Image (tube, rainbow, N blue to C red; front, side, top):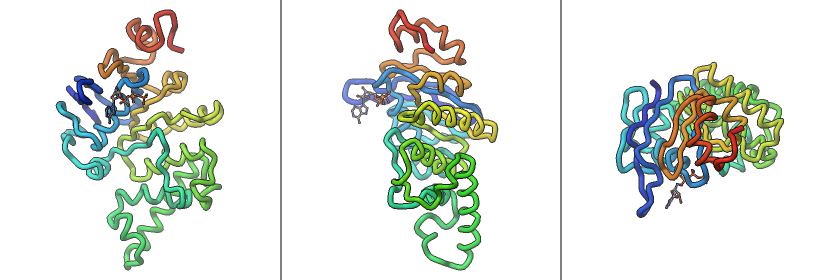
Length: 255
Ligand SMILES: Nc1ncnc2c1ncn2[C@@H]1O[C@H](COP(=O)(O)OP(=O)(O)OP(=O)(O)O)[C@@H](O)[C@H]1O
């Protein structure tokens, strides 16, 4: 297994934001994390990426417990993320944004890359080429020289995903990647996510768009009020009466 969570718990005041959460993510698979607003999905992302310490539980990536590591150490261990509210460098170009993501794994680091030490140039060229290839894959290469802020919203979302991929992570956490996308963009995104999987990148997806979830996910984890109420394949989750009740109300069905 690439990632294994067990017993992960975090309270805010008296409220259990996440309680005793345990599931695993296989290499090159897509796990969707769904549940009503306030269910604990973002809290769980913050815990996995090290910005929020859990009170209890273990988070093991490739056999190594990462609880207590700093966010940059977790990123170096191969976990990156995107945000519900985009966090791009708006005054940098599209290409520079992706290159900044690549520097997470570069020997020189982001700051040192600004100085032209001998030996930096070759690595810089390689990062540039790889970043352009990522932009090509996601359909943004034509916009490489624009400022990130000049892109329409849907393309900024795709750019954030390209930046998250630039450090060659084994696992990317995507926080509502389809939010604000039109149906055509959502379809491009879904195809792209499934392609990533075939290249060996695993994804955990927080997503409210059920069509994207059902089409892309191998497994679905359902949270409600901080508790994990179900885990299974899309077909199993669609047929789970407790999920239907908690997530949509008793009379409805998941798309
Ligand atoms: N920093 C915080 N301080 C206090 N309470 C918090 C904090 N962050 C989250 N919570 C609470 O923890 C619970 C889980 O919130 P969380 O944002 O993880 O849910 P979510 O499933 O991501 O919701 P959404 O879909 O709205 O983003 C909620 O009751 C929320 O109010």
